[in-house]
Length: 495
Ligand code: NAD
Ligand code: MN
Image 1 (spheres, rainbow, N blue to C red):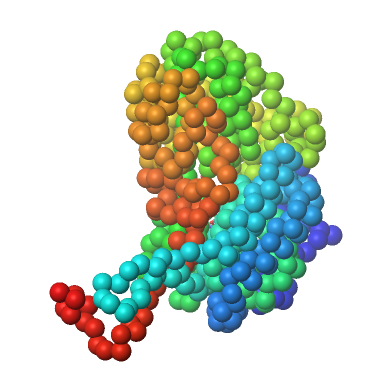
Image 2: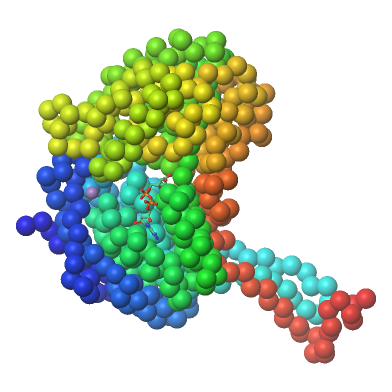
């Protein structure tokens, strides 16, 4: 019998009210069931929101350095259980162990950052225009935060959202992706063990349609932080407008790496392989396009195809695996569809292109790392997010044209340029439309203490990470203290 997991509501582990469950399977071996989880509905969300609302009234009054102490404890517990969590994460979503360890590490970094932020949460003191009057702006918590997350970073992304939310004095109703409920459960177990009071964090498992929608539409949820696909993000934005919730959306990407003719080609090769095929291409920041200078095109392509064909596909738990499976059947089907689209559009398939079925791979959602060459900027495989191990290579001439090609998408999350020419690098920094730009490094590798997010249809202008995320989880309150003992009329008595 597979292990049975539950929701956490008001500090208690409970089944869905309906009693329904769903299975979570290992994408590297679909015969293995990781566990069963509650298939929750609106009635479960209502309970969780009620608990979070009640907890908020007390939690908001706990001094933030004390809240920070709990964050530090969460970080310590994550350190202690890092390997165990990484293994469970690989088992439920497939990426290789090195990467799931990195995913947990990002949670640890985010916890320790939040712990120190408990002693900052800076506001401003400013001069008043009137005598004997004091003016300042302080941050106040907002209330109940609805947290909806994808499966590709099952630890890092929930921590990016919930740690700053809770450190700031809010409480959370968390709906993880139904492909990664196990990692999410371990995270909230640890948060409770670290000493969070009942109701500060609640987890409700289930599908986006039922649980996600119920959270977004709920009258008593004050803000939504969502990471996922652009289509669903737009839908969330519409539903949330009914209650005028604050909404942070981190959505799709179509990231590119530019390689100029003066680049260190070996370095650029390591970068593009890691960017395109790390996490089986299933990162919002994955390198989905290579914009390659014509002078080095043939040479670099032969280096790239050679190394790609040598990548070892396999179960992420095995030490020699470099590329794991796609997360599920529908994701692999999408990849296959785009392989067809690329061929119909006239791009040249130069590596991979097929479902991988040899030996041990036959029971998992494996797909060969795939490269299309001679892609033109207007092709769909050059513009649309694929979210799988597929790289589209576009020929270019100079840096200005390369940047123009890079910007030719509705997305704007991450970007990269390999060049030894500082003038070109700074032109790229200025002109690339994206939230993140790397010089001589791949499109992936964001650090927890810097702003993370994208422009255009990658998001709605908010940032996660670092100090900037605290603007999302707090409301500004302006405070005036008049100690003059008389009525002083602003804009009137001082002029
Ligand atoms: P998804 O949009 O399918 O699901 C994300 C979450 O939303 C899941 O928890 C899902 O259950 C829930 N959901 C689904 N329908 C919903 C609805 N109608 N209402 C409310 N919630 C709903 O995305 P995914 O497949 O889990 O993740 C892949 C996508 O996420 C890609 O597009 C990727 O680019 C994006 N992503 C973006 C970032 C970023 O920071 N910009 C990071 C990681 C992933
Ligand atoms: Mn799974």
